[in-house]
Length: 119
Image (tube, rainbow, N blue to C red):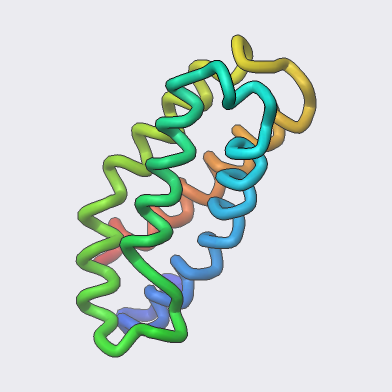
C-alpha cells in the first residue's frame, strides 16, 4: 500500500513534508554569491519558489483537491528546474554544499513526483 493510502489529505501532507527541503535549497542558492552572476541559477531559484508558493502552506489547505491539482500543474516546472540545476551545478561550483543541494533537491522532487503520480 502506498504512503498516501488514497486519502487526498495524506497526499497533501506527504508533499508538504518535502517542501522544507525545496525551500532550504532555494534559500541556499538564492543567497549564494554564485547566483549574482548566473541567470540560470536565478531562474532555478524562482522556479522552486513558484512551486512552493503555488501549493501554499498545508495549514491553509481547505480543499486538498485544489492543492494536489496545483502540485500536478507545477510539477513539470519543478522537475525542469531540478534537471537544470543538476546540469549546471558542476559549472556553478564543485563545493560539497552545491553537490549536496543537487542531491537533496533531486530526492525531494522525486518523492513529490511519486506522490503526484499516484493521484
